[in-house]
Image 1: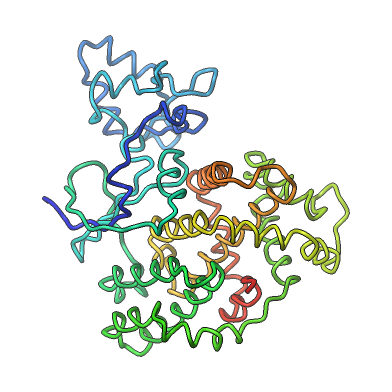
Image 2: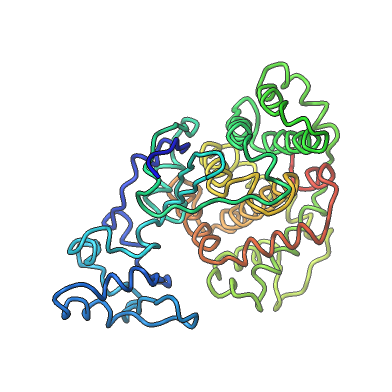
Length: 410
């Protein structure tokens, strides 16, 4: 297939997997699936004794197609060497790694109809997170040429609703990223501007005026636009009780004691429980009592995080927006994608604030990075996480402007 233009954050080209820097985090604790093509490749290794030394550590999955690497008694991959490098890669080369190990933490998407690629990295990798999150300057994006045949590439497909907009994806993404990186505005103001931009995109789509997407994108981020920003923000009215109620209901669905996430994130759940007296084994506070907790310390902590570590929060937002292919992450409308993005971020911000407020983590760059690494790992490895958020968004079917007002504290 040859080469293709590729749009990516600049740091992607500098990334190199190095288990010595992160203690081989991705080679421990997680279920590592070996695809059937790689399994067959292992079986052809000669002498057979070397093939068997690999195959003996693999177990067939219930689907009958793939295999899982059986972790050792320390819950580490048996092919992880003392120097934190991969035994298979060192001995046979990167071509013998399974699909997951070849790609993680990389996301490589190819948009076949438009003939371009996008590459990014998951923040669940500590090395990638340090490169992406801690930079003081806005995250730069570049266009490079990539070999479509090199590595593992996913062919990205859009829904029928989104297909007319696919050719404008680059323009839309660039505009959205520019909004999220507009340092004339606070983080919450940027989220509001992004919401109104989304609504205008929906209008263009409904009116069949897709040729105006570029002009619309260029209008945002200008000084003239910022002069009219108060007219938009005056339409919103932040209500702490609505904010708390919506997030705590969602948290219960994601982290309740019957949820698969509860066991994996006890620290997160204990932080929220301690901050708000919220939990199955504690009396439920009224909304008025919850608001008192929010107004007396929690809100100030949240503002402190956003203001003092704005560069980290901005970089996380930008990377999450790009790595998830917003506004096409969800097979639905552009506005629905924005609501999912806003909800997922506000939930993450809420948990982070609870961690700092209850002093379960210090407020510093390294601690923030570690937090985002951990919560990104939950999101990456637990598909139902986003499914629950999407289901909640669709079930509520809220007015977007009203929802922005209830979630964004200006």
